[in-house]
Image 1 (cartoon, rainbow, N blue to C red):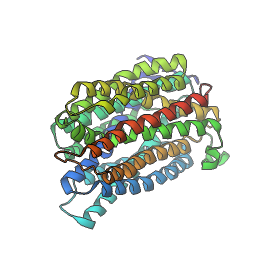
Image 2 (image 1 turned 120 degrees about the vertical axis):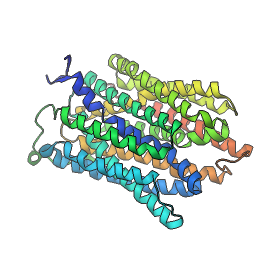
Image 3 (image 1 turned 180 degrees about the horizontal axis):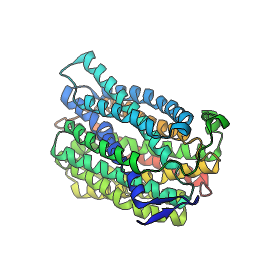
Image 4 (image 1 turned 90 degrees about the vertical axis):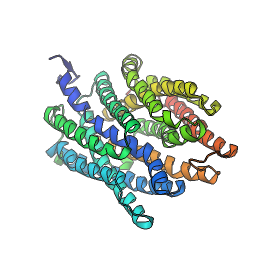
Length: 426
């Protein structure tokens, strides 16, 4: 079996790389319905207002986001003795149980339904946080070689995109509630493969007694490279979270293309999956930061044209989905690889990955929380109502501006910060 070598002399077979990457499939499959379909599901099925749903998502995601930093510190404290496996075995049952409860609520209403929604969300978020931080930290410890870390990250994100595509295809032909069974089966298979075939750290970790248990936030942000990368990640993340939250509303009420929503999502994520080898190749030649800047520029120049669309513009929006999806590949593959480089440059490789990825996931959750918690109520205040037979021009204009213009401005700001950050040395 062919093998890939990292800079430390450790060999990983292509099968081991696949075994590691495979776990991204169920994690990504879970994320799409929670972040994209959930608002519409509870709005249409139970008549909850967008303001109420947005407020619940904001509060629950903010609470969950702060759990990430605790989970990262916990992983750093105990992973040297136990590895990353125990955290995954704790996390996966929680997120599976929470996901099933989230999309199979009892026939309740009022406070009881809201309590069920909040409890299910927190269970999903807690399990997802612990699983994703342990999983990403495990991958970051496997090598310190820049080219190799990009390849490993790209492989993981490619498989994750396959999970997203599977979820998008599934909900095109079946109710989103039934996805919990596919998630259960894929989680068991992927977790078994990960635990069986993925090697432990590339070298013995520093004993816990010989180092601090975890880095504090002050210590993390003392590093200039991490501060710059974190700011870029937050700006770019909010820019991505807003259209993800509003996609179904924009397609259904602005474009009147509800029946094509699943196919458009499929085109978007397929394009991202196809782009992964391209971004990995480009990053190996011009560095991850420069390749990511090109991806941002492509995203802005393609997505901003959504402001000119009107009802029935299927072909034009499909082109936008394909081009912006291609740019998404850079957003997925390159930032985690850059973070691994920052960790290496700071001298924290194979020591504090949990702390870094805990804060990283905290930022990702806050991006999604702000997108849902601020954008959905703002749209409702502007007069926008989902599923309106004929929305007002003002309301649909607000939807278009929020969906396309605001994210483009935020991504342009992220691009400017990235170009000035000079991260090509990590």
